[in-house]
Length: 150
Image: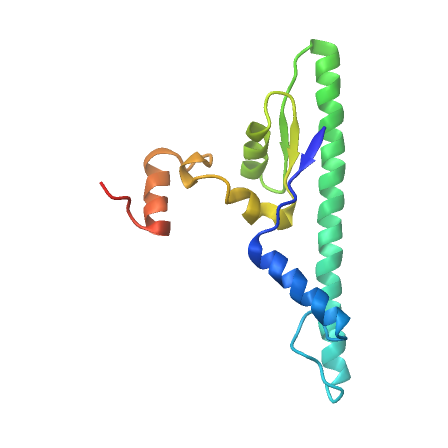
């Protein structure tokens, strides 16, 4: 089966709740509270920006879904022909796909949606991210949170 990361980071969830409340109150989702005197062109731009974001998210999710189907079919074919099982990760970035692949071994698939990247990455210490292990990861962690007490 394919596991799609669905956790929301706190800020995104809070933003969605605010937007939901604004919709219920008749306010615009992408800006400050709109008044009746608001310029119609500002409202149109606001709506257009919101629409562009929604469309881009739909496109990203559609591409990820199709890529997940292709990878799933490939994994099934691999097992059928060679009796080998494989894990796979599907994401918009190679490092995310690699981490996703390692997450659900030995025979599973993880898809990481673009909007879930931060929530997904928060699970892992910096040193566990490919190319950031060892000294480089330690130095970056020191910069991010300060040096560890020694």
